[in-house]
Length: 152
Image (cartoon, rainbow, N blue to C red; front, side, top):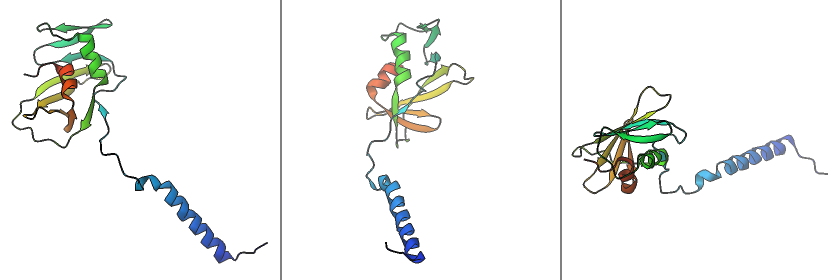
């Protein structure tokens, strides 16, 4: 049986720790995906009570949703409310939308005293940007169409 000096044992412990540190941090050496993560507009488990649009609103009545104060829309209110539950956005670097007018939508959730205010901007390029709590997000045009309909 080989006998190791105290210095040799210390060196083995040091090298073992360095190898463990390298193994635990190995994932930081791998390339990151180029697409930013998708974020939900509202929490998936949130209970929507009302969605206020500039010219109409959608309100929960018992277990269904109905349109209030506006013209008949081409999307069923249940479908529009469900779209808000599952809508996802990506963080955007675009925040220069000075020339575009916002389309403001307020979503009221159960158990929260303040509504969540979203400002939708359609840029000249056709891209739709959402401002929420001073952060900018990019959203698919088809999803935006389902969420808010025609933005005026």
